[in-house]
Image 1 (tube, rainbow, N blue to C red):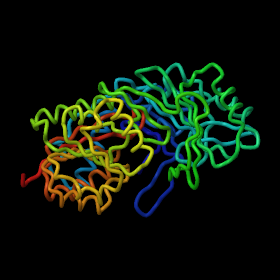
Image 2: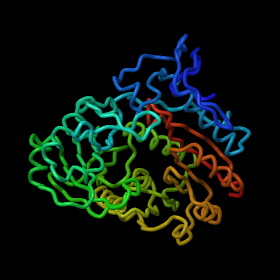
Image 3: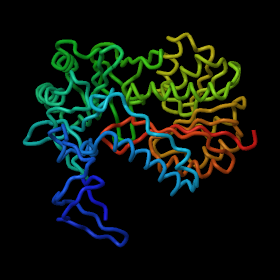
Image 4: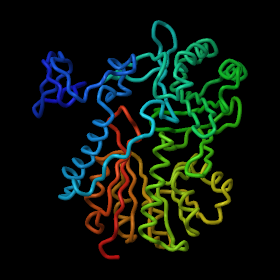
Length: 417
């Protein structure tokens, strides 16, 4: 029986149980005796909001279970017999709250008013938020404030607003506000004046999208006020990121991941003229640190916004002459590269497509560093890559405290190098 909201070690009396042919699921229960790992939830929306389902679990226990989830996926899906020995302890996040540099809030109406919020637990319905503890401490109350301003500044266009995104820089203390909207006319001057009257946001943009929001079909990014991009510093590199581009959500943990990559490279002792590749490179989270170390870096990315950001970030850092930026699909473009000695792979949550896995195996790259936010798809890919590679190390990182999500970095070495 799966018990929603329980902590391992709780003694409970199930109240609402639904059965399927494979398992039962308990949706509500009476807590008889709490687990020693259960803690008081600091968020007032803990009982309804689905954003932080693990906040009732002590942080030490969260880290233990995140490591366990990686071991379990590698054993059960990846068929690795030595996963328990390979997987290191989960690296903690320096901040357990207020850690996100990006928060996206859904937009919906409640009582005739526009609201910002997140999905309810195990539901497609929403909970309206006045505050969110994942935002930086100085911005906790922004959801209620922005909802109030948007109710005033968007009249006929409210149904075109799909999502509101806030990006906040830990290095510079600046923020960007992005309004994701379907195509429509708006009073841009009014939006800029009401949303950014005290210049709290260094950048205010409107992202025009078509189709389903999850597909990210961006038609245009319209600058309403300020720079038109967000800035962050990571491992001594400065990044300028456009609203649609991906960037690691936890700046401090991303820095720890770059440090781990550096430690791996130190162990491999590769020459600075060794050709290396960064696949699914995004706006350059790993590309810039690689280019600081190597003179021949190939970076492959298919998303146009990220490619433009990557080129700008490389130019700003004076590293453009070290990196060949290739816009396109990894499966198609990998075979065109000078054979790299090492490749960093950071695919989407869905993992590698079969064509990309085949291309990697055909390329016979001596070393791979696979970065994943999904242990299940990671384990699926590792099972296939393990035909030609041995796993040298596995390090989980707690990129998302208070949730079950975990980031993983794996170093693989070719069996035939």
